[in-house]
Length: 352
Image 1 (tube, helix red, strand yellow):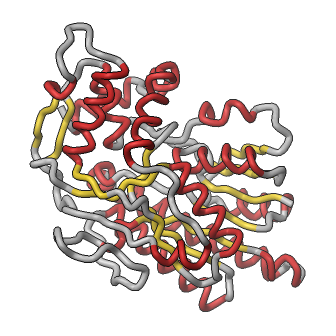
Image 2 (cartoon, rainbow, N blue to C red):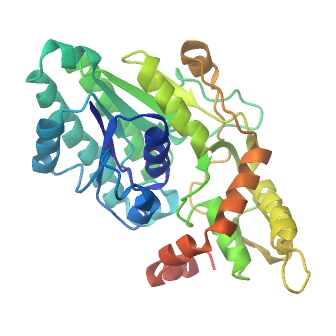
C-alpha cells in the first residue's frame, strides 16, 4: 500500500511526511515541483528510507501524475501542493491561478481516470484529501462567531480566491463523478521547516539578524494559530475516519493579534538567545504600511472535527511557539541554506 502526497517538500507537507513515516510503514510517494518554498533538505533524514520515494514534478503535468498513479496505485492522495503566500499573490496572481486552480483541476482529472480503471475495492477505500485554508471565508469582525464549515466563501486576496476555486472544483468532482474527496480548512500554521517569509519564521530570522521586525498597519490583525504537528495529526484522523464529501475546519483555538505574536517571540528570544548588547528584541519592531485588502480577523470553529473524528490540538500557543523558536535556534544551518540572495531581495522589497 502507498499514499501519494503532493507538495510534500514544503512546510506542512514535509511535516506530514515525517510524522506519517514515524508512525506508519506505508510507503509515501512525494510529488513536489520544488519551487522556492519546497526544500528536499526538509526530508534529508529519509534519503535511505525504502518507504519514501521522491518525484520532482508538477501536479499540472498529466503525464507525470498519470504515470505515478498507474505505477504505485496509491490508496489516497493528500493534496498540499499550492502557492500560499498572500503577499506574493498580490504581486503575481497568475502563478496562484496556475498552480492552485489549473494544477488542482489536472490532478483531480487524473485521479478520476485512475479510479475509473480501478477495481471496486480500490475505489471503495480511496480518499482524496484536499488541504485548504480558512482564508476562503474572508474576514471577521471582532465579535463575530468563528468560521464554520457552512459559512459562505468570501475570499479577499488572489491567494484565497484561488484556493476557493480549487475547493469548488474538488466539490464538483465529488458530486459529479463520485470522486471520494474530503476538504479541510486550516488556520495559520507554524512550526519546524517553515519558510521564513511567513510571519513567525520571518520575525525569528530578522530578529536574530539584527534587522527591523516589520509589522503591517497597526499589527492588530487577529489569526488563529495552529501548530503544524497538530495539523498533520488532524489530517491523519480525517483520512482514517472523515466522511466523504464533507469539509472539516482545523484550528488551534488560539486567537492572537500579529503584534502580540511578535512580542511573544521577542520575549522568548530575550530568554533563549539574548542580544549581545542586552537590549530587548522588541526594540527592533517597526510598523510599516499595511498591505492591500488585509483581512482583519480569522478564527476557526473546530467543533465538527472534534465531534466526528475525535481530533483536538495537543499544543497551546504558548507550548507551540516555544518549541518553534527553539527549533529555529537549533537549526540555523537550515535557515542559512534557504535565505539566499533571492530571499533577501524579496524581504527588502516587501518589508524594509
